[in-house]
Length: 187
Image (cartoon, rainbow, N blue to C red):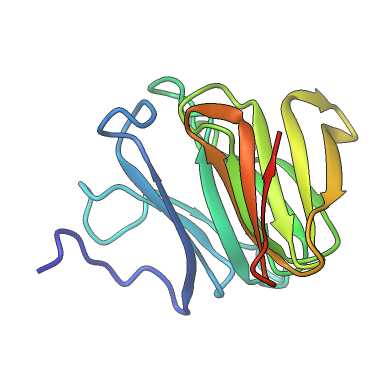
């Protein structure tokens, strides 16, 4: 029997991430899900049936397929963000303390994977991978009022970059996984 069960979305759930509890970030244990229905929902397994946060397109806005989600900035009891990547290249950063969209950008191709270098520290780096074989590294400490976060992008593979994962022992290192079977370690 499952410990927790809920009908979370109207369509397929593409992505899931967790934080909190057991020393992985401060604050409540929470799970975030992203779905083809265009919604990103945050769940607290101690609360039945309803999400604690529900980020969805406003009335009349096109619903985009959410392909990836990631928690970050969970360095104390109050702070926490969720980053979501969509099929059209949108990346949206949601501030859960203020329940507001903090930042958004578009990387021109579908966002396959997102990861902060660590979930349980003040935001530092965010890596996003995409369909066209690139990854984008955002410096989450440096935000311009109109241009957003400082970033760099690199053509990593000759195919889609499906995953990015940081080395837990050294957050300066991360691995990308390409659609043609290639793995690349980056610093």
